[in-house]
Length: 473
Ligand code: FAD
Image 1 (tube, rainbow, N blue to C red):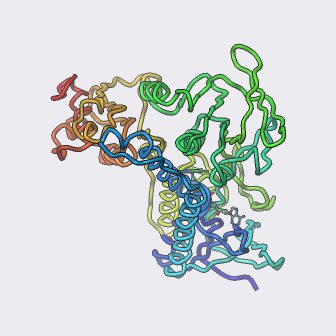
Image 2 (image 1 turned 120 degrees about the horizontal axis):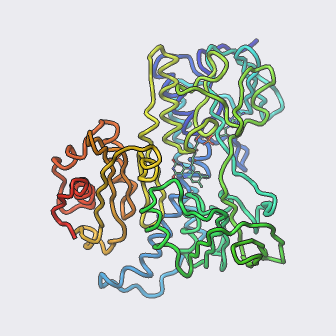
Image 3 (image 1 turned 135 degrees about the horizontal axis):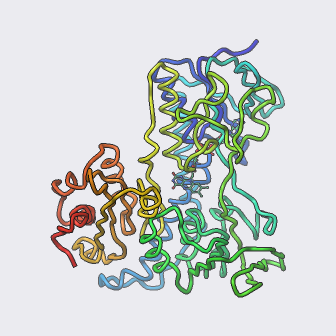
């Protein structure tokens, strides 16, 4: 006999578990299916983000940044620390503890909200039937009124560098190195490559990032990516653009990587190699041929702007559909879909999704870049303000970067905010709110910002949009 539910969610990442909780809160009889088991055989909840993504990477970024500060930054404050050491095993154990706490927390939230859990691989059949292949080999069948597909994504592998889980690894492997690699190669200068490269560079690895594209951080505003490249591309953290990896050979405990750049073929030897060339939607074995759900040409589940698939009553959210592969984008889609199922006409503002790169300093943006506005023929005004002229940044001894704001030349409406600097991940929320509330640059100009704060750079950048910054340099 099939179990009956009003909503069945497949996948418990930040898209799926949030959708399930919201659906249950809106009074729907809800189930969630998760297939991920840890080495101990127990199911783990929270998907990529909590287990091997956002959270563990940020835990390591925090630990490594503290270590780097102890080595390089304390002295200027008059603090001397004798030969600090990094206990990598302890750092990894702290990260694992945070992951356990949060994944356990998700299990508790699902239970507390009355969501029924199924442990095993879910696959969608015709007529909104979800079959769950359990880990003991048995199968359970669920008949759903509504199905939300949230299977997430997996790392892309490239033929020249097949991962071996030891010397050549993906992002998950790079969260687990038991010692600091002397020389670390990273393929891909995207968000994940820069973040994980930073972790190990701060701990002492000599990092070389090989990026096939000639451009750097193409999604970010041009002026910001130029600043970022200049800041990070240094001995110890080299970013080589236009370097297309063509092969790799394991040689004992190292890997020889061959790549092609404008000067011809070159090789580099690394102790570890991280392949961070992107992620792809995961749908293998999750959709039967007669499920009716269609994929787009890039393998994402095809959805409309309210996450409806080609089958009525079947929705898809998160990394498995188009749009930025970000946890908060998936969660917001989950809430929207749960509300639609509950009869509301919910919509999401895809123009106000923030992007953050948690390097030091951080990079964050929301809305349009100057390049996009130019390409779209929008008449715009731009204002920028450097952290070098912000008292709080000086007090923190951290004056790198700037805030840049773009506004419509006629309506004054804020169209984009771009930040490179200490605390950018927190400050960008001001840009998100400005976009969401359709603020003008003048609204930000007339707002009182606390002094001394880093956010004063947001205020001054808004003033700079009309060339009236007070602390103009
Ligand atoms: P996922 O989190 O991938 O979850 C999908 C879940 O579905 C998994 O648990 C999977 O086991 C399960 N599943 C799949 N198929 C089935 C099936 N058939 N049956 C049952 N269960 C199934 N994003 C940010 O916003 N901020 C960050 O700082 C950030 N840092 C990152 C760092 C790294 C190293 C990585 C790899 C990613 C990072 N991301 C970050 C991206 C973020 O993790 C993803 O965008 C997010 O996890 C996507 O959520 P999701 O729910 O769509 O999918």
